Every structure is written in C-alpha cells, then in structure tokens.
Amino acid sequence: MKKITDIPGLRFVCLLAVAVLLVPAAHAGLYQHGTVVRMRMGGCLPEQHTFMMAMSGAGAQNAPEVCPEYTLVSDKVVYIIVGRSSNQLVPLADEIDFRLQNAQLAVRVDDAKRESKFAIKEMILRSEWDLLQKHIAEQLSNPTRGVEDGMVWRSSR
Image (cartoon, rainbow, N blue to C red; front, side, top):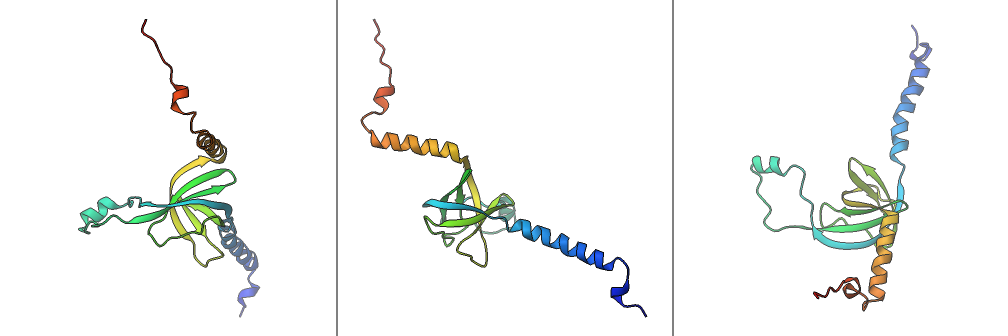
C-alpha cells in the first residue's frame, strides 16, 4: 500500500495550492495610509437595493438617519467617505490604514480586528485639493477683496 506522500508530484501540487491561497491574502493586506482631517454628520447615502426593498414590502424609514462623513487625505487622492450608520466613528487627525474594495473603502483603525466599510462619495486628486485649500485660505485671510474686485462696471454712454 502506497502512502499519500509517495505519490509523485503531490508535493508540487500542495505547494502550488498554498502559494495560490497566500497570494490573495498578501495582496489584500496592502493598505494605504491616510489622515482623517474632517468629519461632519450628514444624510446617509441611499442603499443600492431600494427598489427591491420597496417591492418586497419592507417599510420605509420614518426618520432619516444621519451618518458620519469623513475627509480622508492620502498621498495622491483625497476621499470623501460616508459611513453606513451613525456608530461608524473614526478618530480625527489619526493616520489610518485603508484599502479600496469593491467600490468601497475598507478602513482599519488602530489595528482593529475588523475593517469598517465606507461608501465613497467623492474623490479628488491631492494636488487639486491642495490648490483648493490654498485658494480658500487666501479668501479667508483677505475678506475685503472679494466679489467686488472681480466685477466689471459698464457705463451706458
């Protein structure tokens, strides 16, 4: 009677299977780093399957729920993300680990066991966001120079 380990090529197949299983796990562990710079409470994004819920007889929500909306700044992209419920809180000014997953942002805070999933509301390149922030800061530092400077007066002579 032959042992299973004596079958030629079985060791190669087992090593190949282990390698195939470990590659997605290693790829899934590639987190980016970012900093949460703003948080506000706003309306939750509508669910993807509202039509199906309405047709199944599920009752409509009476009061609109508020969800946290965060501005997450990374090296190349700035994300505006929205939580699914009001208890998805992320600390401000902390560096967090995140990754893109199925058109959502999976966030891991302080080496937590589980990731929190956030819907992506907006994305903007970091360079454009920096220019917008600089423009806003200039407008706030010089409030007397506003719309009046940009107006053109015409005389009807």
